[in-house]
Length: 122
Image (cartoon, rainbow, N blue to C red; front, side, top):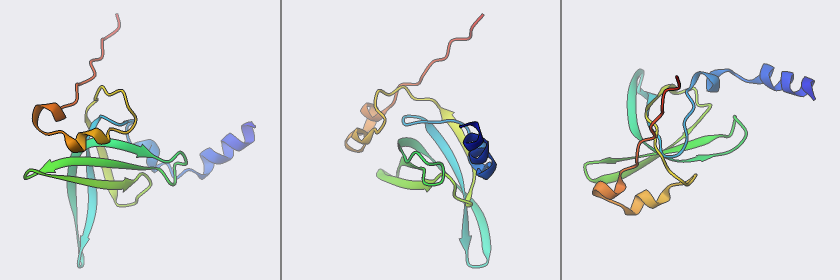
């Protein structure tokens, strides 16, 4: 049993371990590498994670939603994508569901997600 765990850790690329832990409801900024012709540039996509899909680290994806010019935009990112430069967690949200598709139908203040408050231990 322990040999299997050691083998899984050896075959991991380590890229997923560099990213911070986040879940549905968190606001994140994904810095994505985009190729245009022979040039490369970094593009930041900031939004709310509405779902995490997949158990295997190699097939795991997450969907990020943002509202741009009054239009909702969703983008699906593979966790192991070589084009993801970095992921930064801006806010930890307090939600009671794993997939928050109900945000698609909400606008304005109703579409806000409460922020999770951490209490420092003494």
